[in-house]
Image (tube, rainbow, N blue to C red):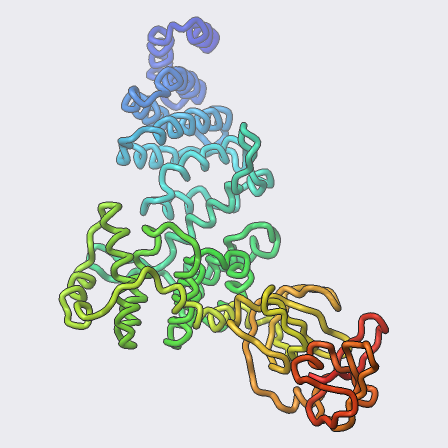
Amino acid sequence: MPSKEIKELRQAGNLEEALAMAKTELEAQPANIWGKRNVSWVYYDYLKKNVSVEKLDNFIIYLSEIQNLTLPEEEKMLYDNLCWSIGTLLFKINKEENIPFVKLVRLLEISQTFSFTKPSENYSFLFKAFHKSFKDSDVYERFADWWDFDNFREDDYQKEKLSNGKEIMSIVEQAYIAYAKHLLPKLNTNREIVFDKEKAKAFIEKLSFLEVNYPDYQYPAYFIAKLLLASGETEHMLEHLLPFAKKKRNDFWVWEVLAEAFNDDPDKVFACYCKALSCKSPEEMLVNIRQKMAALLINKQNFNEAKTEIALLVKARSQKGYRIPNEVIQWQSQDWYINATTQNSNIGFYRIYIPKAESLLFRDVPEENVIVEFVNADRKILNFIESERKFGFLKYERFFKNVKVADVLKVRFQSGSNEGMHQVYTAVKINDNEFKAQFLKEVEGTVKIIEGKPFGFLGDIFIHPSIVTKLKLTNGMTFKGNAMKSYNNEKKQWSWKII
């Protein structure tokens, strides 16, 4: 057997002579595994010499020659070395402007015939290379189904550190995101919606595994919700979407997804669009949702606001060289558009509806009734009382222009400590006389103001100096009015004060 001589020729770089000797041996004994093995390693050496974009055609030729040898599964060393060569070439090709896509598909087809070690570092490297090549193409599902996500190693689930110290999303999360995107409904060449519901359901289970076992992954919950929505199973969709949406609530597209979730309720859709368009985002990213909003505004006959949305989206599209949609062109020719007035933005209009949108996002957070005990209008801060166990203060500017003492609010609290500043998700004014009655009472009596003091009392009920001044109260005056329950910080006890 000339195996030793062939190896020496290979090591010396005499590949033509090595290949001739190996082929002669194989022709003499076609079924001999050593003959096939010797030829395969010579081809592998040729392969290594052609790992470049310019020599892609040669690389495919030699890879095909190895494929034609139909080596058994046991040739793991060769197959695993092929992983590195194929992957390295793919990464080089992916840096090019003009990518020869058909040839990348050919590389995939040949690779699918090899028996790589699974799972392994080599096999994961090959995945990363093909993932980068096909993640935005229709080939991705076929590739991923062949590679099989069950072959990821534990290392693949960890974030990857770059040479500059930055961390990027793990390849596993990237893979699941890409696959989920391809499972979502899409139009085929006949303009028909294509969606494999059963395949989506099966993949939801895999995403759920990630959601539970890798809680630092942000996107599995989002795509579970999207696939459930596409499957028509909205019952459990929000339980996956809401935790994700809370983290991403400052991103406009989260509110677009929530609008989809409440598609059967026009008022909620409208509120979600208002919230989406209040998020800070590049204008070119908002053009589609502005068009959707314009359609809703036209239907509501809010023509000034509709024209404003149209003006903003046309400006953004024109600046980026994007086409103006036919629907928008038709709107611009209609009488209502010609007669409407354009504003700088609709942000003031959005704010009316934002609380309703945010209430959808935090619907799983319980609402609590509170009463306003004091208002600092300059700082936009109010003191509230929920009960003798819970009270404090919060900033109200996000929710109300004006608020006054004794207003009752329905609030979703985010955080805060008793007596301190509380962060709030949502807040709306309500009428709840039964709740208010716990903290208010009518009082009548004689005002007592000690000489030289700015404050006074009505029995044991305190009258603040500001009330004395505002109502021009004097000692001995008969007074009838309202008192509110209040916490005295100095005495650390509850008492009543005139309001």
